[in-house]
Length: 121
Image (cartoon, rainbow, N blue to C red; front, side, top):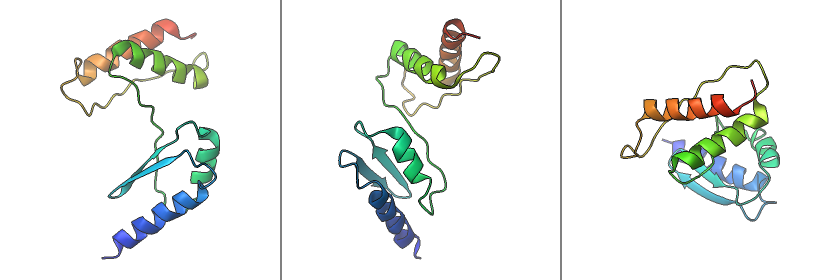
């Protein structure tokens, strides 16, 4: 019965630890919160969120157009930040738009092939 109170307290605590970043927008949705950084440094936001009691998990996301080339380019940029020769990887997509041109398996294969062809391994 008090779940809503806990969620509100958690949202308030998140906003407090990120108050130094006025450009950040908060979008609470039931038991989730979307935080739009609007240029705020992810590394510092990440560091602060890790200290907030009650956060079970969070996932960074990048919003890009639904264009295969943009998806491939952004995926490659992200991979280049963490990939080291000899590592293996897997592409696992989840689509919220099921009318998108490619189904999940096609998208996994297209992006995976693109990464394999463009990453130094």
